[in-house]
Length: 369
Image (cartoon, rainbow, N blue to C red; front, side, top):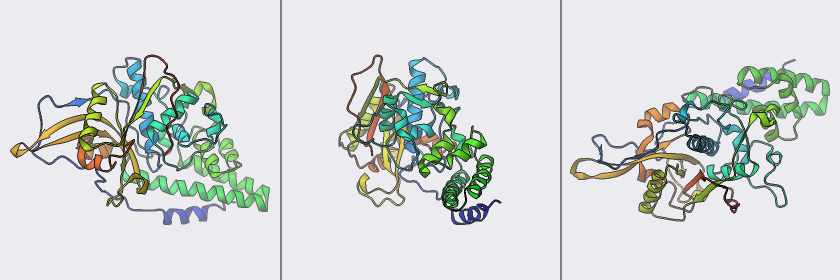
């Protein structure tokens, strides 16, 4: 008997929310402004854009994009946007590397990072951890389409994702309750729930594996097994992440120095990562107070001037909110100052990670955010 269906209906009603359309620091350039001659710095050979859907893993989206970009750069791939899913890392799988491990636990062992959580992190921190384990599942094994239901990242994708996330939680908790009452009832429940999950989510796994996921000891491990099935732990379905990464973060700096750092990284064909507070309206005055941290990467810079020779710095950001967002924001070209203000010019408001020609000595691990 499909006893989980009423709970799902309740979840649909509760979690149907209307999308909000706000600037969140991504302010468009005023009309009439033109690009100053010779001011443009831009990286154009970028990987396919990623969309996080409703999952709070913007940091993993950025990390995956940087890893893909560096792979293309190292292998002289002329059109990185055409990189096959067998050569792209899974941002869902990368999101497991979002936390510190207890002392005396092997940080290079991928199995010590079981479980997918909503805990935030930074893109560069995730790359730092991934390079130690050296393994990330392929996009073809744990695809973005499991959490992003429309490729353009439209608001409906977020709404559907929120519904499904709550449904999964209700199903998992329902199974745990039923195991205390009747194991046969619990098994029937898990089978019915697994069929529903496979019908709603694009998963590359079998029904029996989803059923087994209900037996995991935590919801985080349950979602891990659902979204990153056992076959993704097979080495043939993983990509090797080299250890030779140069990883860094800015010190506390002002606006002018932040622009200089962004330009320096772009000149060297490296992608700057910005950490910002995406609250709308913005109430926080420091990242530690922020209730809506967000990560994007920068692919371009230019100076644009209007009447009276009034000039502004403009940067091109690649956001994880889908292709529609990019299109609606002039392909990501936004005013630099309002966005950088939302990083409060704190330490690590700008970060970077790129491959070096030869392995570096192991660096101190970045602190998890």
